Length: 261
Ligand SMILES: NC(=O)c1ccc[n+]([C@@H]2O[C@H](COP(=O)([O-])OP(=O)(O)OC[C@H]3O[C@@H](n4cnc5c(N)ncnc54)[C@H](OP(=O)(O)O)[C@@H]3O)[C@@H](O)[C@H]2O)c1
Image (cartoon, rainbow, N blue to C red; front, side, top):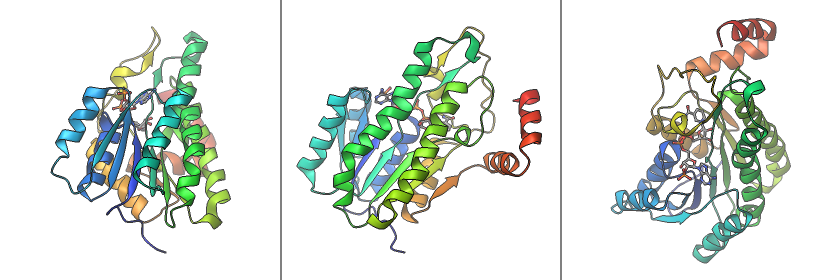
């Protein structure tokens, strides 16, 4: 199997203004990829561009809201002005929501699904012709261990990541003959701004971030999975244990998560 190579590649990374997306964009530029870096905060994207000014690859900031269909089209038009083909789409932008479903608003569910699921799949739909024009393209979806196993207090988030998981599996099979690889990356808790901006209900509990992985490490492992054209990767030992337990012994996983989750 031919490895995916960053040098000279045209790439899109969503959610590049902080955390995992920032690191993926930086590390790709450091390795010679040209990165269209997408998020809402312009000043953060400009900071990212400055931080990578000495890198062999270029950061091209693209500020806007991914839930806006017109903005998604602008991203594709911008990429088309750079290159006729796209080698990598990293769907990383995402938001969380914390607190029991019974106390949450319908708006929380809508917003999480709009950002985490609909924006991701619709951007991918628009990008497919340019990905198909490349002979070695990868779509990398940054999901979560919570896209493998639901836990209490994050029901909408888990639903959005399960949706990404199922859609990724279907798309991978559909695109198998086209040469486009779909790589599903499932991190566990990561030390980013994610929990600071999560939509919380009043009953939300303080979140435990002990043992969180660094965004730089998550990015390193995600890029390694892209280069190897992996189908999926669960990043942490704890995450692997949870996925394994849920697949092999779901009744035990259910009991443990209801009690300690
Ligand atoms: N942190 C964790 O513990 C953890 C664990 C597992 C999986 N993940 C997943 O990893 C991904 C990255 O999360 P992170 O930890 O790096 O969180 P983060 O630091 O909060 O980054 C989220 C990124 O998404 C962007 N974003 C959010 N809504 C957007 C919108 N409507 N339009 C455009 N961009 C938007 C944000 O930029 P702007 O605010 O500038 O728009 C930001 O760049 C997410 O998909 C998350 O679900 C995170």
